[in-house]
Image (cartoon, rainbow, N blue to C red; front, side, top):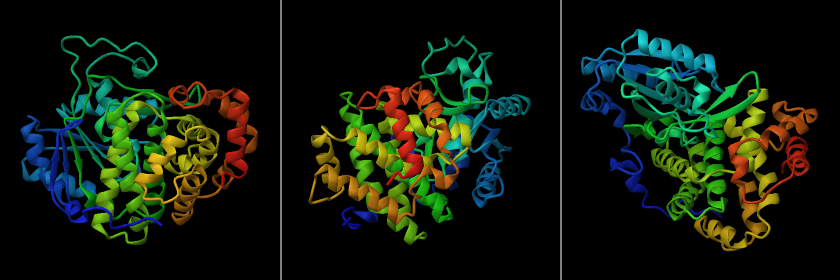
Length: 397
């Protein structure tokens, strides 16, 4: 059983300011500081970037009102697709430049974060978006090609996308998701306000929360020696497995919402170390079938764990310990992960979200080209990955 009281949960209701890895303002009600925060960064005309489904949600109006209280003009661009596309970024860049904006506020879920970051990547230079692809040489910025100031405000507890420049964008002609980034683009502020996640529907709470759990597990299993990321992955996993069921069953519980938001952030920092085959497969399924990313990850996770974990008993023991499990065996750990997925009502197969069996060879081939496949703890052949995809489609758990 998971012990929901193993944290000093009163601290989850108090404002906290952290400076690693970027300035982070955490706490209920911190959105009200956004006008002053923008002014302190020298901005007067922010562009708000969000996804297509969030333009009419209350947090957008609240954000605009807080900016107006500081005399700031702001414009909303809500043209980011659930799986962002190159044309979304091009339109956002056009609006940023034509409006004379001096700062980007990316607010929403992972797609909004990715869209805002991509607009910043391309706004003040002539590089094509795909020149920022993770696997390519880093573009050299000219003297006047600075990146816009960026503030990130997550409204889901899942993607952990708020502290880095990495973003996933669907390449339509390749029917693949590709990672773009630049090491010199960093958010000037990540604002984590758990009040913004209270209204998140239970299915999205579950899907994004399972995404965060996947980040923590996959990052910790990456074989590279990176104790900073490992520590964040374990504490993220601790927070997520403690608070996710409670956030779903008690959606107004600010401690649960806060615990999930912090856990998601920590797991997001941890995966700078890398991810694994769950994400490699999920990216390509999402690119082809436009599935929700966290939900897709959650379905695939048990299949890949069964492939990866044998021989990794020491790492499993550490994850099981941080989750408070008495039995630290691989079987008990995977059983607890499956139990959490059951509690939050994750479907048991990709076929339940309309992914057909006849795509398995194609998805496997593209998954092996994903950067996350390179950091999976076990090398897998094309045939092995295809078998993983087929299992996930037919019966993942």
